[in-house]
Image (cartoon, rainbow, N blue to C red):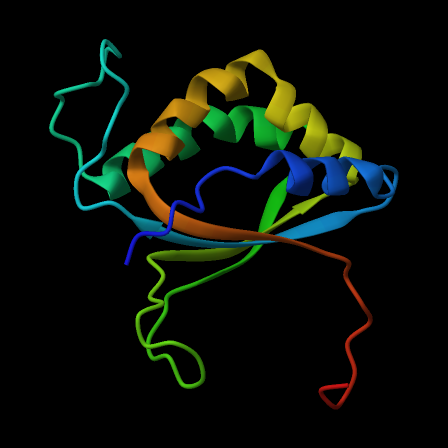
Length: 144
């Protein structure tokens, strides 16, 4: 199943920017890789024979310094085992929560020139994804 949820729509990005920028934000990331990375024609890595996972790893290697410089940290990472509730067709290769000291830090990351160079690898490697802005709540003894 490929559904082209790789980059935010303009409306979704505008909604993100309209939210409070000075508050901490956690981003739930669910990512499914392409079997083979697809780079734009003429890109230096076009024809390199990378898998989607390898292209995404390159994205992580190149974007990581920007992410960390702006105070980002991965606070949870997991490996999908079984879809208990939900469409069986939704399988995720990477699942993690990236935390930022503020939504402004996230926006600074995605507009950073070094990040913009790295994101081509993300686009080449990702078949579909979900990126969900979350506000951290206090933990309790129950689910509510």
